[in-house]
Length: 249
Ligand SMILES: Nc1ncnc2c1ncn2[C@@H]1O[C@H](COP(=O)(O)OP(=O)(O)OP(=O)(O)O)[C@@H](O)[C@H]1O
Ligand SMILES: [Mg+2]
Picture 1: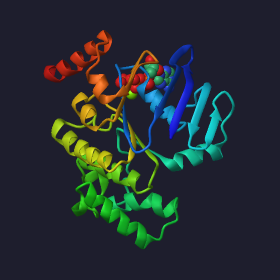
Picture 2 (picture 1 turned 45 degrees about the vertical axis):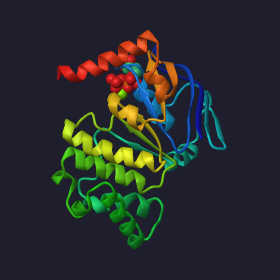
Picture 3 (picture 1 turned 135 degrees about the vertical axis):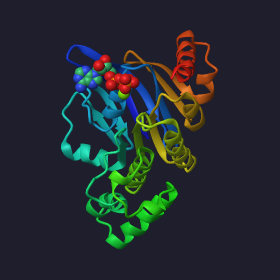
């Protein structure tokens, strides 16, 4: 279980996260929603120490970290081994074939045999619908395919949690759909995930839990059902704006 208490993160004199507390249940998908600049990426990045919050507590299973103190690189490494971040821009290794991209972490970091890593990578590529792309290079993939490889690559590490920051924002709608379907499937298999997205229809389907962030604070923290049934005017306005912003494109 991943849990934060009173987490505060400041950039210069701007408080991006203002003493926020929440939990990210295991085997569930938590979706983080909120307007641009509200602190969603900062929150996600703080969870695997790509940002270092100044204060608060961070709990991960038995680990209890006082964020006001320095955190050792060993501790950060330990957390990163259990949490995989999928970025918007895929970050595949351009000089490695697709299957080698998926094998790289298991071989280099988890010290799996090449044969074992290859077998697993082939299975994962099949799972994300890309079995036939195993031997091509990332430059030969569409954005949606590249993002699915990035997801297969993170699954290959068997992380406790996968973090995804707007995983489809660089994609046009058809390519987006193929990535979202993969994520829905993974969510069904109870992989713990935390996803930042602006896609409300997807959030509604994939999320067990929703956190709505505004101006560095959590305005809503609860079930997906309760989020979409909210009477909070600010959240209703957000839902309306997001729904209509799709129509303006
Ligand atoms: N490295 C940084 N240096 C200074 N300010 C930053 C930095 N990163 C984020 N911020 C500021 O912190 C606030 C939260 O940013 P964050 O990127 O977390 O927002 P977001 O909710 O992810 O927005 P978006 O939906 O546009 O991605 C913003 O005001 C942003 O300008
Ligand atoms: Mg962001």
